Image (cartoon, rainbow, N blue to C red; front, side, top):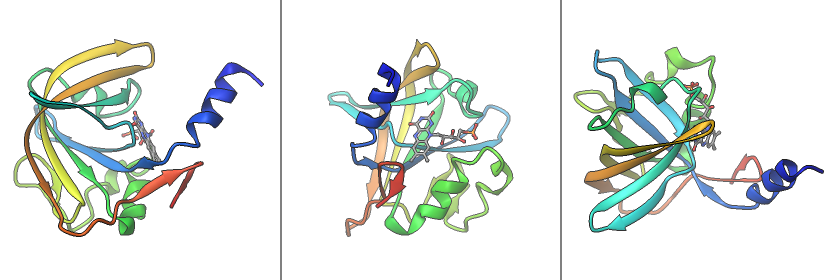
Length: 154
Ligand SMILES: Cc1cc2nc3c(=O)[nH]c(=O)nc-3n(C[C@H](O)[C@H](O)[C@H](O)COP(=O)(O)O)c2cc1C
């Protein structure tokens, strides 16, 4: 097997928590993409990073200073995760009634909402590493996070 095959299989052993990154572009269109690559960087300043594929629809809307939200999903939001990772379902991504679309789109019933401003963009081959400066964070009282391991939700 190639190094890529072995690397992919090794990475499938990680348990990921599943989030949806959401934003509004500069002409007001909403975007949402399922992501597992969210990692906190530091508390001072409060910051996190996400790795975003350059081929994804949201990619070019992530400009320095633009706002986005990381919505950590609940165990019962598997279907929404599938919708936001299916390139044939762009039109359905904001059908869920729990989206709050007043300003920066966020999922009102998520495990957590982390509101960020893009502080740095670092290109790495197929992906861009997006550094978000955290401006606000909300979280639910009960812990029930949607997880993904070996290509399946758990
Ligand atoms: C559990 C899971 C995690 C994912 N994590 C990422 C990620 O961190 N970064 C990324 O660019 N795509 C990730 N994807 C793939 C995108 O969600 C998918 O390719 C999406 O369709 C791309 O967005 P678009 O259809 O709006 O272009 C993930 C998909 C799943 C199912």
